[in-house]
Length: 292
Image (cartoon, rainbow, N blue to C red; front, side, top):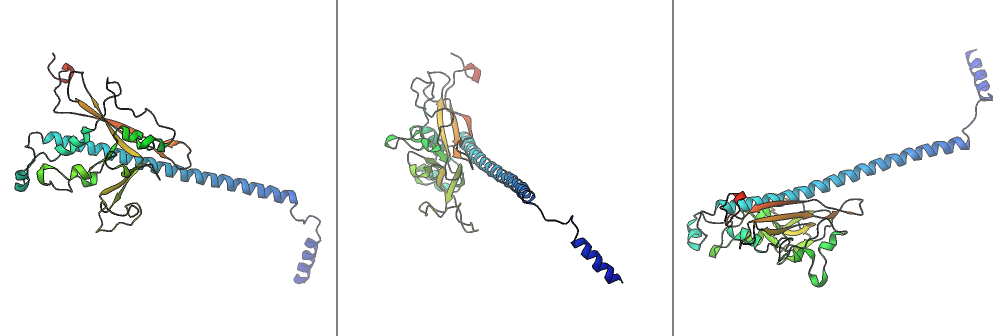
């Protein structure tokens, strides 16, 4: 009896006039809703990824910029603290006595400082603000780019303290720490990813075998600078009055330029630090000197 009623109920449901399929309009509406949700989700995911990439680029550039500033401060403070020590000679070096180890490095850094923009003999010509294209800093007629005109350089902090004083009172630090576009133009190039410093294992190593492409091992030391991409430093001297023969201070402009992810406009962050020359004679009463 139960099976009979089940068959009768099944036949009734099958013949019911309310049982029908989805119409074409309903199917198209469902597809449209699904597509809209999918597009919104993908757009949100892309925006999140782009935001993460931009944040990473900004953090990397800021770290590189801060590193250059800290290296400059360290070299300057070391130079000032060693002024009471004798200049390095072969005899002092052989005896292992303390001497002015950072003097050569600091003098090399400020030797090519530019005259200020507002001076009578202004040589500092780097434009204010960011240019339309990062490559504009590296390109110029006859190879005379903006960076070369302004004696741009970077500092390799990985070599500070790693090289010993050499004969004649000179240091390898001045060679391996101070990287100038005047002597090593091949080390400066437009950014490929962002503002960054690329290191290699040795001075003559393959350009592609660097710290950004090779997995580091405990026996490898990537401490030679290979490329400075999208980052540079320009030293500009300053005086308190025109009577001084030496610059009283130096302003170091640390600048970056790169094209961010999914961006058609260049991105830039920069900073400037002022370091005073302890050997300059100041006659400015505001600075504690004796007025004329």
